[in-house]
Amino acid sequence: MEEKITYLFGAGASANALPLVKDYRKGDKVVDGLTKSMRNHADTLHLDEFPNHKDYMQEYIKNLWWLADEADKFHTIDTFAKHCYLTDKASLERLKQTLSLYFVFEQLINTKRDSRYLVFLTSILNLMIFPENIRLVSWNYDFQMELTAEMYRQESFHNSYGGASVHSPPFIEYYPPMGNVFPMNSDYYQADTFKLVHLNGIAGIYRQDGTSIFHSCFQNFDELRKESLIDDFVNNRDIKNHLLTFAWEDRTIEAQALNRRLRFGTEAVKDTTILVVIGYSFPFFNRRTDNAIFNAIKESGKLKKIYFQDPNNDGQFLKNQFGLENVDILHEPNVDQFYIPREL
Image (cartoon, rainbow, N blue to C red; front, side, top):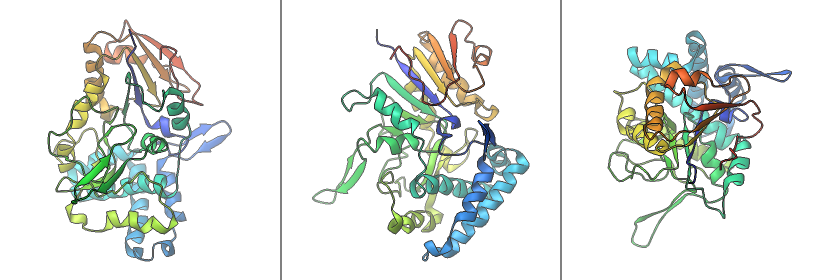
């Protein structure tokens, strides 16, 4: 029987391109965490590069410093976001706008890439087809996997004769999508469609009427197109909502629109026989969703083994946390490349 292999990605899976929450030591070097990286990003922005949006970019720089300072007070952005959610929805909106643009800016304008994604995809592909027995579930706001998949086939949109919108699908079907048009509030999607599910959304924004405002967003943005990306964040901000959400959200418009995340995530992990966990620390805030994911994995009774890829943690805590006493958990401390099990 062919194994069904599920990858569960955390922030460590993108650590070679994007910052982790806290500073960490890599060899003899200390790598900046997220708040330091946001401050460095703010310091390197030049308003002259955005002549049409100087005021907005000045506001963005102030917001980066504000978010970094508040996150340091609360120890993580997630904790500060929960505080805003409970006390000040305007600050939560400000936080999401800033964090989302930061991830988009770093990846699409500053072209930050973790090369491990390319090695991984290249290794597992069979005749330019993504394997049917692999699913990817991610806690990351970044779209490193989607950007890498664009190297094999670009997602595109164009108007056909008569004005109908035609969609050339991405190489890896993912949710939530960031294409030109997608029905956020309909039952268009089949639960088993997606090879990649972002459990807490993805950096980006969509229009309140249910259609995305990003046009072919995974194509590379050159210097001449910088401001077209900022346009999407600046114009008509009052009718936009975020694709970025937090695991504990349940009463915001974004959470309601993206309520399929968990359904698609649990569908993706059904019948898993081999689970590979890469760079994920299972934080407290994600516990309800993590429980739902592991319950869906355990439901079939087919899970045989977990490979836990982390330079320090061996993953044995998963046995008690999710009732996996009879499942082998193997530690993979080498993080130079994403682990590919021999069962594949």
